[in-house]
Image (tube, rainbow, N blue to C red; front, side):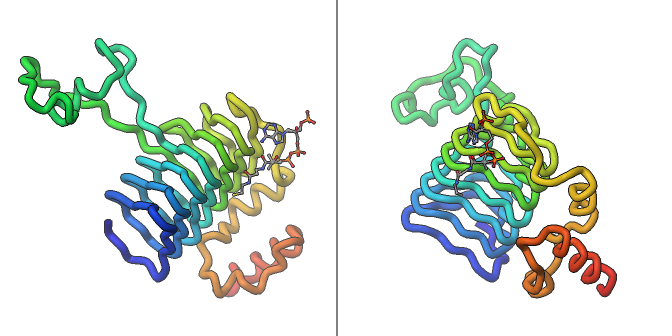
Length: 207
Ligand SMILES: CC(C)(COP(=O)(O)OP(=O)(O)OC[C@H]1O[C@@H](n2cnc3c(N)ncnc32)[C@H](O)[C@@H]1OP(=O)(O)O)[C@@H](O)C(=O)NCCC(=O)NCCS
């Protein structure tokens, strides 16, 4: 693990493997991340598994969520990993494989963009993009990219609405509050979106 962060909170029996942690990340107990990039202000709940995924700032994932699960090949003899992890399966260590498989399946990167929220018990299939500001409802299976600031639910996840009107979404995508230092955004009226946008406009014009 490469660590360059000011604060990383790890719950009991959680683990971070082969990942790059930028900062202020919170990983809940029993959760595991592998081959990920974890950005500022992000968090993952309890008993979640995330692999081959790049997070944006302030991306929040609930509990018992699976993101980026590796796709096994469907057109090989079997979908079983013994075919490409030759000799590494504990029960096949002494077996001599006649044909070496040089081309192993490569996991696609999954992208969880800034200011997103993935609800409890959801699955985000590998290679998908949860775009900025979007929300995935509890128990959903995401099979397609989610558009910015959309709310998607169900299996397969379908869009049921958007968090804001189009004008507001475009403004938020322009203002990119998640790139500002935390000290600058701390004074914003978070629960009044129109006022928050005015305040962000002012902050942006002064820096
Ligand atoms: C999706 C969610 C954010 C609510 O969004 P919303 O836009 O306020 O949605 P509403 O409550 O108005 O519901 C709209 C419709 O979607 C349905 N719906 C809401 N959440 C749903 C879900 N997770 N799965 C399936 N359907 C859902 C509602 O039943 C409703 O259906 P109807 O129009 O047929 O009555 C919320 O329901 C949810 O899933 N939150 C996640 C909670 C969680 O996991 N917390 C973990 C903390 S990290």
